[in-house]
Structure formats: C-alpha cells, structure tokens
Length: 143
Image (tube, rainbow, N blue to C red):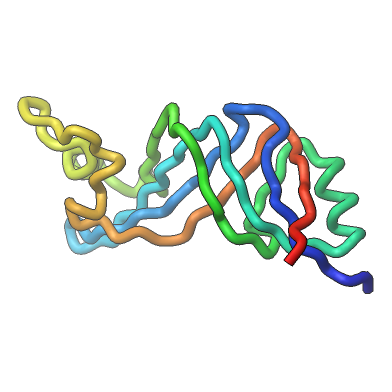
C-alpha cells in the first residue's frame, strides 16, 4: 500500500457542496430526527489519501466525504438551508405539524433563523455528512 498524504480538498466550482446534519429531539414519547441540509458557495477540507484513493477521488463528480478521513476546515456563504423529517410517514398530520412548529416557531411569531437556532430550542446535533457535487481539486499539504 502506498504512503498516505494530506491534501486541502476544494470543489471545482462554486455552489457545489452541501452538508447534512442530523438533529434529534423527543416528542410524543418518540425520538424525532430531522436532517438539515445546508448548501454552501464554497467549502474546504483536509483529507488524507494514498495514491490510489487520490486518483479515484479526482475522477469522481459527486464525492461523499464520509467515506474518507477528513477534517472540515471551513465553508463560506450558506446560500440555502432546508430540512426533512426522517421517517416522516411514521408521524400523523398533527405530529408533523407540531414538529414543524418546533423547528420554525409559531406562524404569528416565527423564529428569526429557525434552522440556525435549533440548539436553542432543544434539538441535539448529531452526525454531519459532507458532499461535493462537481469534482474536486487537491493541493498537497507540506507539514
């Protein structure tokens, strides 16, 4: 096996990376999970790859970074956020309405930035998945 090296990984194009973060909260005696998807203009990661992995990743258009040894460095200018309720079909309409209320706030006084304030409203953050959708460029890190 070839020696691994560290690289700075960036997407080839702007507006081509997103992350999915899971948040959990107990409602109705059930654990409720939501996935918050944040679309970023730019992102940057440190990644460790051997030569074979490097060649493969450079050929990919869509890259799920959870399959690699990475460290998130930064993202810039989140231009859109969205969310989905995991397994939403297991909740009835009233429960789904209550979950949405606990995310967005009441209609007459909605939260200012609901998906940025989840922690403040009792949601517990969990795993994060990072994805690049346009291929990547790598720059070797010289320690």
